[in-house]
Length: 242
Image (cartoon, rainbow, N blue to C red; front, side, top):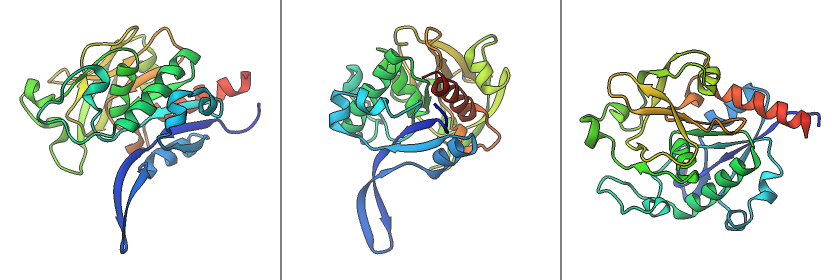
């Protein structure tokens, strides 16, 4: 099939204000779609859909690749735990939708990238859990030191992994904002990246899939990052063989 690969980006549900208006909206920061477009893909925003949560194939048939994007905390009930005192407001309808898409995308071997919350969702879709409040263990708020701002830090990546190829080397300077991370690993999930100093898990992948990678940082915020470009390239190859 000719044409640009179609990359689905799962959207958040948030209250937004503009002018005199306030409404609950399906939102994705524009940096995601711009990153996909720069890499030669078509960005398709995916609002939570209860019907697709029950039967995700109809939606996944439209896509060549999938991004599970960042956003609010995941409902701990989706991985069998009670909320931590620091776990924020959740949107269970979003969680249900993304878990269904993520799980089925893995079954179909659809190229899949999880970003921040999306990395955590990739782990949960594989049967894993989330560490609900990292500062409790690492002793600092280094990964979200400023409300509304990103932390800059270094990540080292395991050699010989898909993550190393996606990142473009064994180290990366990244931007992140989170207080949660990967807990117990899901089935087939391997850790492939760590933050310097505190050893927080920063990247995971599923070696049994053609392209299933999660990063805890935000590559869409860095125009020099190769992460989203790598997803689009993989999706383009898949599209040409469909």
